[in-house]
Length: 241
Length: 36
Image (cartoon, rainbow over all chains, first blue to last red):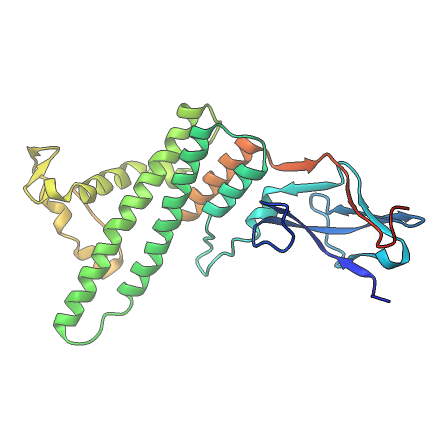
């Protein structure tokens, strides 16, 4: 006779095909009592400490496992748990946003695309940030090789700046564009203008190379090419920013 | 800044799609011996 079955997680999947590689999110389930051969389960309540036990039922002894209506609740934290923070505390957000906008309440398609694009740029900015950090911390070898490393660090930094700048711009536009009450912290709003200016200079480097800003000569244009502070203290500069 | 921006994207997702979703239908794993 097969052993009783232990159930620790329920999953929401894309298709009804058993065994398909199509997991959206898995949620922890715990025992919620029994009534004769009916075994009941539920998800953890908000803030509840996981008792660590499975829901155990024995289908070969005639038992059924029931999750009554409302007993299974999926939270955005269940989705976000799949994103593991790195040493700097950042965890990717694109998959959390995509999955939650699929699983949660229906979202306007434009807002879906907007928020997912901003999230993807954030994740890319972080990926570039880790590469810049590694590049800045590894200058070694003959001078030509060090110059290659410096150009690599600068190239990654400017694309980091573009990705982060665009992501922050999009996040700042969400309240007015979509009537979402999003309060951005001072750590973002206080740096947004400088970030936008540096981002604009890097993104339109073809303009700055000619000494121009938006097609017209500008005294600050060439300052984007002086990035010595990046190599000495990891800071990008442009004009007064 | 990246972590704060991530938090803002997360908070937006909560606001537009809710913090949680309850499954309103029953889920039943049947007995191997047939319905009781």
